[in-house]
Length: 281
Image 1: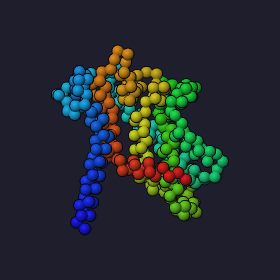
Image 2: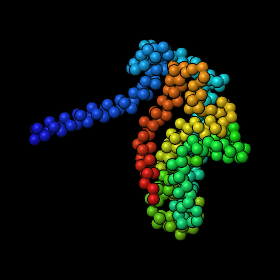
Image 3: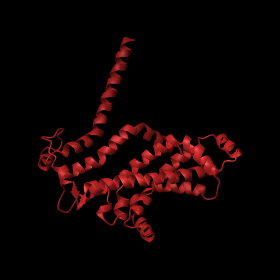
């Protein structure tokens, strides 16, 4: 019994060491990014794997206050405004659509719509550049916040998650409200939405995290740097004149650290949402 206990402890210790090593491999790039934002470019090139900065040189954070003639606060405002607005629209519209599919799954075209959403999730985003540009141009939304927000609000994964959740609502609850004379909109507002608050919060968080990192649609639709978000500004820092590694790492830290913190606080809800949406009926 004692030998078995020692063996179990040894296996557990090895498992912990392995998991600690894997955790370090995943966390090291983020730590290196933050540390590099305080190091000079010469120091990074001479000793790139250093875990601590020689000194906390904040020059880069001052240099990126204005990028391409645009203030950093405007990039930050664009990121927050576009991401929140697009995610709110996505959650609102997909909740209505998912409820309609849940209530009337056999209506003509609904199965085709669901299949189309699955196809869009597998379609390479790079192949959408020309179609997106042409559609937005024809709608007269090129170079506008509305064009960017409307495109980013197309989030099929949120639709699939909500459909799956609505299918778990007992039909007897809906039918009893129907017998009492409630309309579909009243059922949706007074019964379904209160029940769905946890999943709505989950899909909003997932949509926010997915939209925050978007850069290609914004680069295609925007016609001025004034409409760029932080990821697009980060992409634009690589110029023909070279790369300022310290400034790039500083902007990367500003772009990613807040969203990493948000994910760490909400990871259980986000991962639970992805797991729930992975089972598609």
